[in-house]
Length: 249
Image (cartoon, rainbow, N blue to C red; front, side):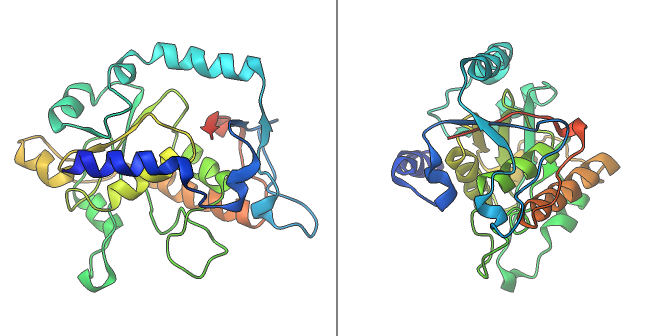
């Protein structure tokens, strides 16, 4: 059921135009230049002023393809299949190109705090993806899709690279994780899957959870929110340690 729903969502991405900034071209490659980037200058809106220099060069494409070739574990999973099992993730959890995101989000009347719950229990090594924070800061509506500049800055701050396979889960089984899967797909990163059954299924399967978040994980979550905030305010995004390529389409 989850697989078929996500598959239909993937098919719908071709006709989806979530942001005016997505209409610039069919394929973009973004990178930080000189260790920092600006999200715009003067009176122009930062959302329409590229935070990254976009190029469509054979050398950049070759670099991305080279990174893809090294990711054997990620390549073993079909990109047409939107979910992976808990068993698969458990077997590949320590692979360096596998990045796990806790994208839990709850309805306001549930009175649950996803970040606090992440800190109490999460899949080992998982990072927290703030659905509300990584969003369009110019909209009064909650968690609207951000610009590609903002999304690239936030995801780069989380340490995710072109070659990485991203596994997304949430605390309800399959709820907000599907939204984040869709976000990655919109921006051209198709090496992304939802964990079938999410955290509940992971626990039912008998796999361990971490009961505290590392300082690095908390800092990355904070850095992601700060990075997207800077993009929308036309400020410098850096430092050079975040010189990570991110593929957009």
